[in-house]
Image 1 (spheres, rainbow, N blue to C red):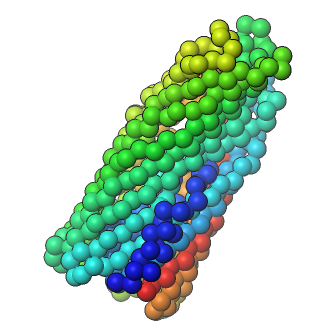
Image 2 (image 1 turned 60 degrees about the horizontal axis):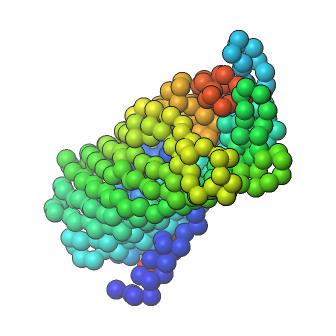
Length: 414
């Protein structure tokens, strides 16, 4: 084993930039090839990004491989706000705040039966922004969740049909929330607030593949839920000009999920993947923040609670890959993602409805390196949700929302 290459691979994975995701909460854009195939990429040959999509498939990697991927996501959307009588009181659009999903991967074949892999990529992330003077600002005018998962993985190939993998997950989240504190009785803004903190937590994953024959294969991946105990700083800037600070604490549980995939090779040039993902979003039942050690006593509540009550849901994807020659490949994909946000649990942190993603891509490869590019269009759809007691509106309607996606990946074999 080349120890210098291993050290470089580990450094690339562990030092990957923090991600700012776009429209939505779950991130599936882990490589350009994965984007091109709608996320249905569980059985790729010789692809280091299998660490993210399906750890059991790193047994398809020959030798030692490193890969980096950069995906650009740009969210756009409109909204309307209504009062208690159903009268429209404001309309507008989001401030376009694009984000990057960055993935770094390293896989090494130890022998004919064993593989080691490590990846650093985002599983959950989001960013949304609206005008600070809008009525939306009483709910949220800037929200950001940076997230990255580092996943050391061991995989074993039992025979020609069975392979399996198990891995740990070191998950980081950095959360920042900004909003205007609004007094519904006096219908006035009391001041801007900012909550900012970060947390590390541990999880795990497991995967297995079974090949019926040379053309048909199935696989399953489980990723555990991860509970973060978030310590943060709370700041409030009242209209009077004085700054109030406090210590903030909250618990956020990122959901566990199941991926089930099927791969069919029509011939040596063309293959089709189907993938279904079940995410247990019901773990996101509330975003409750406790405040203590106020710099100005009796000026802030002890708790800031917000019910979410999200519902578990499914994401379905289909991806097609066709080799034009030994060096050039084209790909296409489609994904359908159910909205898990109920009417009484929505907000402008994640104003995401049902999502449909259309994507295409191409790849060049030779014996040592691979370059892939992809473009995608995510139709986010519409979402209606109720305002909270401290919001300056009673009901909201998000519509004509979409996200532009562009991705590039580079892989090197040693």
